[in-house]
Length: 321
Image (cartoon, rainbow, N blue to C red; front, top):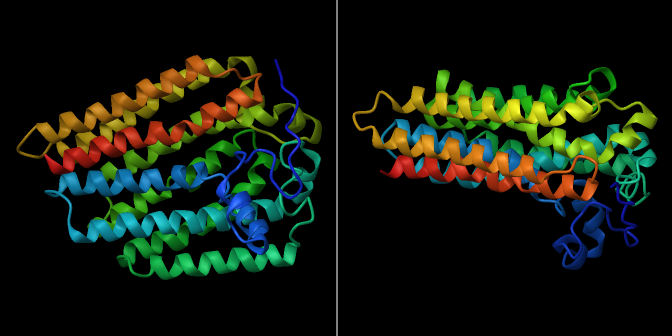
């Protein structure tokens, strides 16, 4: 049964966790900007970072283990994910301000609620992107080129729901770019393994963002916004099952391509356990989610941090054995 939207307190955002650090600890003047960056909802930063962690760990496992460079890559990609997720969300809120004002869950966001002007949001977006660029320029030239190239995907994504029923595909292309970028930063090249890893993340995004989109399907239908949630409707379960299977197969294929040439089979076995563990978590999500209950959709969507960290941890273990 559909639940009525939560009425947020003045200045807060409806779908942010109650009592989050932005609302309770951040200086008052910074709160609207941190809300623009979704700092009060860290799940997006995790989902942007996790493919980076996959890439660093699998690349390290395929080349004999972690190096000091990998420590920098992990730390810097975490900072970069926070900044670029913030810049991307700010851009999304700038372009979607009219849509957000018409949807119950999003009308409390900083721009439609009047906490921040569009001009202020543009300055904030540029500042975040420039700081992230300073990190990017410490990487291998191929990684720098890939990072610059990703800006096109970030720019297009907010408009995708206006012209395709598959805006989740554009999110998947953008959100998993770190798998390619961080592999290139580690290795200075791209091979089939990171491409398969990128593809696994892409299909995983279709899985979790379809669940997320079911929160807004009624409002989206009224204002003409397209999504896979509206496209699949009551057939969503079948599509989620297909996305689950393909995600696991692609993750396993990436591990096989990267690790099969090694003398010992142990790293590959450990990595494959991570792929199957992720699949088990996605199956758990499918059994828990109720696509007609927005609160349940949001809770299951947020659990994808854990789903993505399972293979990250197993791939890291594969680099250590």
